[in-house]
Length: 295
Ligand code: KIV
Image (cartoon, protein in one colour):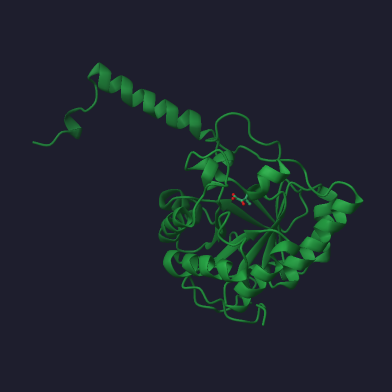
């Protein structure tokens, strides 16, 4: 059995009612929790949607109030939140703890949690055990895992067990030690493999698939050839959705960020400025003042 958009989404996040009323994922009026059925309906309407990563309750609540319909508790938390160099060391315990925080901080967004490296590669049963923990303990509405043809069995079992799955192909950062960080799908053979991977993810029953760091023309071809939505990051403008790592998007990430990302704010400067202003007032004796003092 595979998941279809007619089946109920069995997560504790939301009642499993399909949204057939044409409500937009971003900018729509509905305040109930978004489900994978809403994602399928958006694809049918040809509607584009945004996804952001989130790793804590407060930031997630800001994005939720801003109408971001899908949040990814990405294993990018490794480099963006936990101070690791890559996503590889992230554990299932860390993923469960931060996913639960993001679920608690949100009311409307569909929350998708990454299965960390080492939590599903052994096979479908290990994948089911890990995903079940994220759905039951953290309360996420879906999980994401990396790999196309190689992850077909894992995706199939999760979907058959009632866990919605987002696939992830192209550059798969958990394989950085083998793959490096470079554009995927260049050349005829690699392009054909990416198309096969995309089909494998869809055939296994995934509700969406991330395309990371692939040529724009190839992402367009994959998007045309699938009936599930594609979520692009470094994959050009034609995918159904776009995802950004939020620390890149708000200018918190130190140093160089990848060319495909866009910085919409400079929080590093804003936070640094606030910290320096506070420190100077403490050192200069101008904080706290009378209005901050109890008597
Ligand atoms: O972990 C993550 O943030 C991701 C996105 C880059 C899609 O997988």
